[in-house]
Length: 324
Image (tube, rainbow, N blue to C red; front, side, top):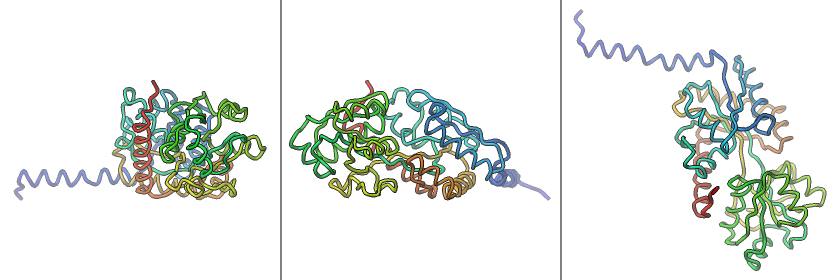
């Protein structure tokens, strides 16, 4: 039978089509690696090892955790962004992934939205606005009123310039139309110490570190940045419900893969991640660390990443925030 050159090419192409699908169907057939852009022993590292242990059992392959800290999470994030898009190299990080490249545009060699394929959000970090007890405000509405009467006279601390605790304060200023002075610290611990001592008036911080001081009476809770109340402090209202309806801020831990990872591989990883997150024991461990279990579809996480990136880009641009 005589075959044209076109027919031969068509047959060759058709023969290649199943290869990508077959690769995805055989996934995984070797160990996986989860890169953490933070030092060993921190919250992100501990969570990554918890997650890796569960993922190993579900996939039947070793899952190695590798720490690549430095440059405000840029080093580890860039490593994953430039890795082979096959699902074997993943990134477990927070939404600092979206912030660091904006603040360090000259050093960032990747796009946090275009160069990653979201896999699954693991848990949200409840963020609480706490105040020194001497500040004459007990909720968001009272605080906004007080700040408007005293522009530039109240300072808010952060765990470091450009971090989520700093940008939360800047977003609050923008949404409320108030003026506060930012005082950056090298970590949450010294910021909390000075807040309790009265050197600064306010601080956005993770509930796991801030709320114990509220319970002891050394600080008072103004409200939660999250869209919903935190189960660990159900009596503390959200900032949105107590005076600033359009304010919402939270952190999250999530897993991402390099852009271009096959859809079938992403779907498999997303399915396994959701099963892990729904496990009662894993969820309990998340809650002990101040995290609210998340999970969700690939599309839901993609939208979260895009919306968060747009929000922080606007806050940084409109607030003229830089690390210089």
